[in-house]
Length: 610
Image (cartoon, rainbow, N blue to C red; front, side, top):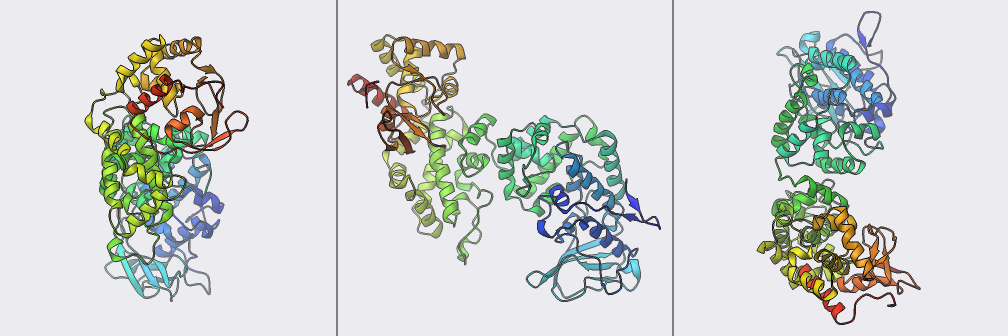
């Protein structure tokens, strides 16, 4: 319940400063300048505007609340209301938000008879001034101390006459007027207190994801009023909050990173008007889906729409753990020429040449760390899309265009091209990555994708799909069934033939996989063992090379076939370590054939090999 003073006027509650900023994270900034009485200061600013509070002697206005960015809630308080009603908002933060909404409902900020302007003032001047005619002429306040010679301005008026200003006006714009009248705010607060948070609807999340081309976690966070906020308070979402949205830890973090391109003001504006006229609709069947529809419209207007990858592909991209969010990696393949800069990327070169001041795509990076992140993502994504995604997947189909666009960009002479080129040839991959990108192996890989010879839904990593004649030859020469022969080739050739991957590539049940494994074990072609990060129980005979994430450990015999860079010893007496794995040195049909040829030449894996 709210408190009142002796005159019956509403008094805001004090909260710990970190509780306030945690509740409003992603909507406001300036964490270090929000004090315990920040909400009281905001409420007092409203009373100063309304003429029901006057400064103490020697003061010329209300104390600034936080860093002054709270003024973006004027006419856009719906963003705060959505978060307050969401089931993923932890109770301590929900109570802060509800209290804030109660205060806002009683203030001029929710009163439709007021008109507001938000802008900037020069540094000199008082904190507040009131019009000569009292409430009729309104008031104006500077909501924060001077920064770089400027102060934030909030001007309120109800009549035609403008109040005086507490300093020289630099610029101002009319505040948005949207959802959040006094009765709407009071009703939403009452409903949340009476019924608890609004019910969650996973179908609404999917609809928003499909409509905007954002991932399911990003859509869930957006519908929960938490679109990419966070970073100062950990965990970003706790276990209960993730459970309320149906998200795993990695999914929640990836969704937050994906939404990191939104500025605080973008988040507030995006969600300003998505709530229903009657807040009770949030608790009705389909209520959140209607919110999703309005949010999708606001998103398309503010951010545009990008193609959405299949959910399974996005999950696979998430597991790659590239330095750009999984959705941005997928978008890089879905629309290579127009893939936007990932969140957190900046034009780091100052001064920026005029021709580069409006750069927007991932290829236009101007900083070496960003370029390295892009290059690593491309060289991780290309072999993954080719070998680990099924034929017909739109992300896989985009790989040839990624290669074409990257080659075209690197052929330019401008600054982004030079920065990207340095990212290609520097680091552990070095010239090997450049040689691969400009060489025949890359061309043959993209030709395989473009030709469409692989049956839809099948994987290049399944030799039965890409090299059926070779599988038949192996089965005949070794006296194996087709399944066992296919698994034999996969173990001989592929860098990560984990049980999970093999079953996905081959569309095998666990029982069918075990039968193929048993056949190879019975013939002495593989050995059973347990090895860290292998994800399988059978291995080629011979030495083993360890690896640190994200590189895959593998048999030494296979490492030479794949061109992996090793350090250390022989893998038996002295441990060997995988230091780098360049892109595939050939197509998988070529590599399957090369591995089998080595076996036929008597150079196959052997337990006695050192």
